Each structure stands twice: as structure tokens, then as C-alpha cells.
Length: 111
Length: 121
Image (cartoon, rainbow over all chains, first blue to last red; front, side):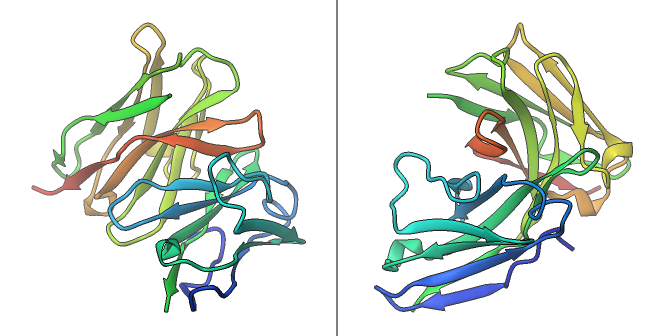
């Protein structure tokens, strides 16, 4: 069982927006603004999409955005495109002893 | 451009020790602010953080695996390594090495291609 809880699946039609949640605790997401999101296409390496809750690395489309409220972080993909279909994982820094935790992943389907 | 490459046996027998090495190119493992990490993914499952090591050798391990993990770093070879002892079939997974950048919080920005390790007799 993963430390962070994500819905197993999400879906949307091209052009729509979809939001994926990631729920942790007051010891990880609730305590640190160090939430990251990774995109993984089948057979490929995870790719960093969002870091520090809402920051985008260069090259990541601004259709991807992140936010946090309390112990829950969210990834929103706007203007869905076929290539956005992938698995998405959240992670958070969790401080001493636990250090890093991942979510179980959400499979995003573009209908 | 930083690149990471995992190497090691793809098949390990139960109860033995899994040993992997990650070779870093395009950047120095001695650079400050980076933690050199291992992450695994069981077949068809999610990501699991195993641990990371700083260039001075200080280690940080997943509490659930801590008793079986040893990580080391060789700055002269620009490599870091993972040993996981007493493996079982539950340790069968794709093992990724990755760079954790702590200068912008905590993020894994560069990843190796991953190597599948199967535990089987």
C-alpha cells in the first residue's frame, strides 16, 4: 500500500480538463511544499512534470498545473491531448526517517 | 545533459544479494545539492522509493527496506551502488537510479532507463 493515495484511474475527452488528487498526511504533503508529479508512458521512464507543488520544469506544457490544499495535492491537465494518456505519480518529501513517499499512480485515459 | 545508467545482473536467486551500480555521465556525482537515488517499480505497479545517498556517503533509506539495504558511492568512478540482501520474489522489479535535486525542494529530475531484476531460482 502506497503512502500517498491516488485514484487508480481518471479520464477525459480531448480538450477537456481533468484533475488528479494525491492525499497524504500532515507529515508529508501537509507539512512540506515539496510535492512532485511524474508522467510515465508504458515502457518508458518517469518524467518530471511538476515540482514544489506548482512549478513546471522547462519544456513541460503550461497545460499541466499543480496545487495543494492541506494534506491533498492535485495535478490538473487542461486541454487534454491524446499524448497525455499515461500513468501519473505524485511524490512528497516526508522529512526525517521517512524521507520520500510516492502515490500508487493514476492511469489517465483520453477518451 | 546528465545521464544515468544502471548495470547489474538481471537474475538473482532467492536469499541472495541483489547488486546494482549506476554510472553517472554529463555531471559530477560530487556536485552539491544532489542525492543519488534508487527507485523501483514492481511489474504493473507503482513507484517505490528505496533510498538515496549524498556524495559524502550519508545514506537515507526507506524504513520498510532499511534492514536489507546498503548504498555506497564512488566519486572517483562517478558511480553509486545498491545492495539489497535476502531477496525474495517480492523484490522482482524494474530498478531505476535517479538524481534527486534538493535545491528546488525534492524532485527526481534525471532517471536511468531502468533495469529489470528478476528473483528466481
